[in-house]
Image (tube, rainbow, N blue to C red; front, side, top):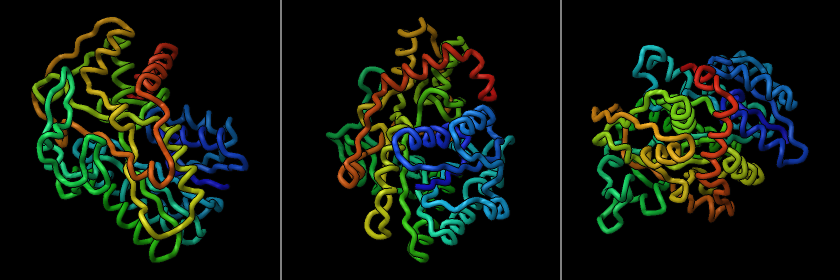
Length: 355
């Protein structure tokens, strides 16, 4: 099977390529990347050594797609992944929409012309911030938990958030680009008869991720804790009780192998996929894990709210379990330990990440 992966030199794109090559026979991979992200050149070299055809190009440029070889499936992993993108000067709102939204037309036109299927990586941040902010939560120790004794909105349970949860604005500038991509991708697949799968992913995490405070939080936190960099608990009373679930790319790759073996165009095509409740962890719990691994290092409380922050996001994997027999195999302890070992052997990683 022939794959084209956009954003091949990012953490997710390169990790998916590694897993597809390792676990699938007869796979060939071509990837395109503009190499703008700090650290991407490191992954370019590694991908080429693995036999991946890495093409330096920009998904925003239709001409760069014209010379790409045919593929059976496109995995769209190219995006600015920060929920704060568009609010800050180094990546303005116009650049965000060009990168995350305008580029999807080139991807879809490629699928249309080459008769390729599409797996679109979307995000847990397409969900309504107002609805997420008002979820009934209770503090259990140093983490928020959903209070299932109180009424909850449609699309959320103790299993997590499902595809049926509200996507009403505001959802952030970043979230709006991902939600718009979902709609356009489904319309193209329906109009031109190629299969489309959409996976709204939780926080993807693992060794080798170029983490920053805005995205890749697990990698950033472990590396920064080890190096005794300043850390902060932002918002929510500065206690670090906000919760996210971690998903390793090798588990996402297993889901994609299942999805790309099914080429239908009807039925459910949009799913949530994350670490789920078993891989959910608060910042305070993450810091406690790092304390046990590296020695104590106390973050500073910062009670000032940050735009688009929400207290609890955990993904419900019920639909992908039912339709694809998929489950998370890599637990949070293995994810964190892998990041820690990588951090210990790569003392330059924060600098490579652009920090």
